[in-house]
Image 1 (tube, rainbow, N blue to C red):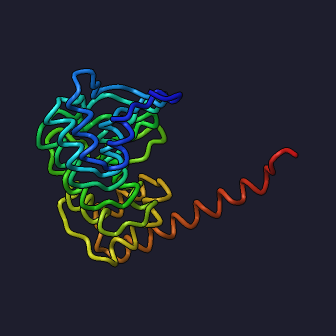
Image 2: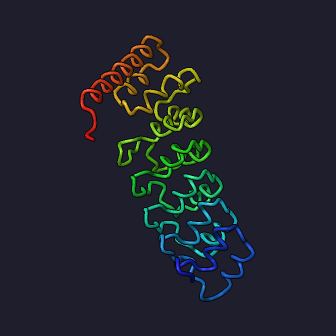
Image 3: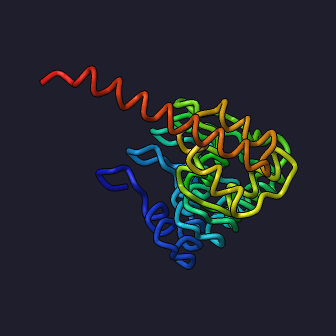
Length: 227
């Protein structure tokens, strides 16, 4: 163990060295759930870097705990989802040990993290999982759909809209949703999605968004920051 409380197993798991991981796991003294100074385990590093074979050895072969959170409340599934490692995410979901609704320090679930980074494949896996809430909100009141809009991920937004509102939007519809969803104007977003293919509704919502933006800009100009 070094000054950061990381073990050789932790480094091997992080760097994808499967043969070294297998050697370290062969020792009776191996601690698969050891935590470093950041609170991360070997499984957390393997998941975050997408090392599927190592994650499988740790989690399935040696019962490494998939629900240990690090210092910022990120679980191994959080790391895998945020970085788009669909194979590792599927491993956790299929074996039912990882909590798919785990929230990190910002209140983001694995679905929210995947949506924010535009990982459509991971989003699709999570939406097909029982117990996942597609409209969950983080500490900033953002939903996965809003985070996908901020990331400007067309495919991720399409998956979420189709799952939540039960229709398959075309690219033109998605492009209309971008500025509204990413601005967190929830009431306008709900109006758009109530009748997404209506051009009059689209124009009215975008006009309202523009008016709000201009009004807020005027307010900011009227109250300049203190110097």
